[in-house]
Picture (cartoon, rainbow, N blue to C red):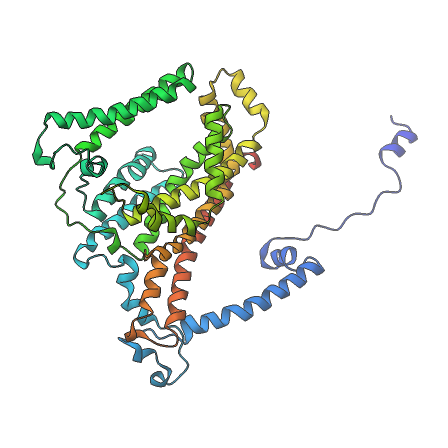
Length: 460
């Protein structure tokens, strides 16, 4: 039996009073009590938010929906004196210019090629967005490998004639004319020139690598030599009409620039981030110079230089397509910013991860690829997607170099006297804002879902 002292110690007489049950947060009222009216500060913020919504949303709904004009074939349908009431958005203007918004000045009889590119992009991209889809690796290879080549052929018409582009522009064509010229001796001379250049670069770079890295560097150089030789033979006629990039425009150009910049900037940014952390002085300082140079120059300056100044420095007949120059400039500019985002993720990885990978006997390359880099990229998903969203919106800057993207096509459409109304300008900019919001908000929500799915540390 327990004595009185033991009982008094276990269950004292002055027990604390029973606490009230916690306030329920379930249901609509419980959620509102917890998130909107839980304190004086929350109440003030809630009231302020309601006032902002009341001041912004009803006028927008009135302009874009209630007072909007939905049918018509000319500016007369959107004039207040003809309608007899205040006129909001002039949606017949968007309907009349919809083909230009989608295709720009792409020839009408060839727009089926653009439609195929749009449809293939959606069909290949959607399965990549879901975690559990069969043949996902094959789908990724098709999207990142075959789809860009197929899109290039469909949009431009193919028939690259790379011999004249690579060597003929420098006066090294040696008299070879097209595919009908046959495989003559000088043909192989061209191949040997490209191969010798690539091997020479490899011989200069290999001394900076040791052991297995030297073999990897030499293998990469050999691969580039073979690819360079193959490009010399590329002169295929696909039977499609050639469409110059200056005829492109609208959403087509916006997506081409944005997707190219996004796809190219991530791997380039990773390589630059790894190069900046390298112990090799040549690799480290080259990466630092590249990153700081591109981060210190505005994108407008990059586009202006690539479009108007670069041709002045090119020799002879050597020319580069205007859209291609803009694509390269945007990709290099975005990769510099991406490198700093990735470097921040690499610095956030604790030293124990490196030591654990080394204890398992992993080489530096495998350690970085299997242990460090996946964790670093997971940590900086918000920063990566933030760069993607900013790049998608920055595509509007190509208008200053006479490339008509979505916003450029709309601005050019405003000058059409057949649709000159007081609300045409606001309708066009409002439609552009809706399109950009849909794409950017979609990227933001998907990144949040991806971040939540990869956050294994908070799973219960």
